[in-house]
Length: 132
Image (cartoon, rainbow, N blue to C red; front, top):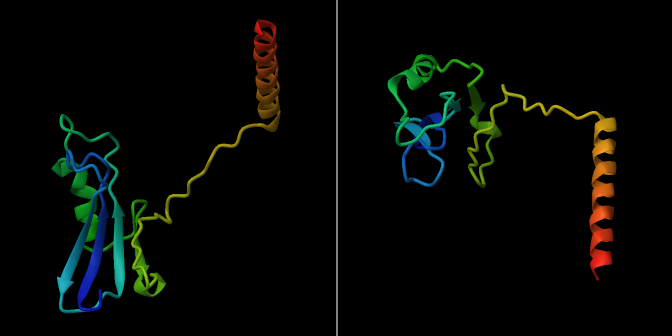
């Protein structure tokens, strides 16, 4: 990253390359200048990829369009190299534009489920005890 400009990190969905067995990330370098900022793009074609459903040109249109100007969007963002740990150079893709919201269950529903599971466990234990 000091001798070449790592300008783009393209995070590909699983199944992009059949049989690879690992996640694929494509790194785009330009020789001759140090890296200052890295533009990340998380490709999400909205479907499962595989042998019968391969990646196609339409899947990459948004990436190609945004990458021309390194524009930030819901699937892309820019990171300054100053924020990257120099000991590990960890480039893990974590999209800051997509907050992962978990829908929380109502506490009353949780308690009701726990009560039902406790009753079921008690019944199972009683049946085992009778069998002994």
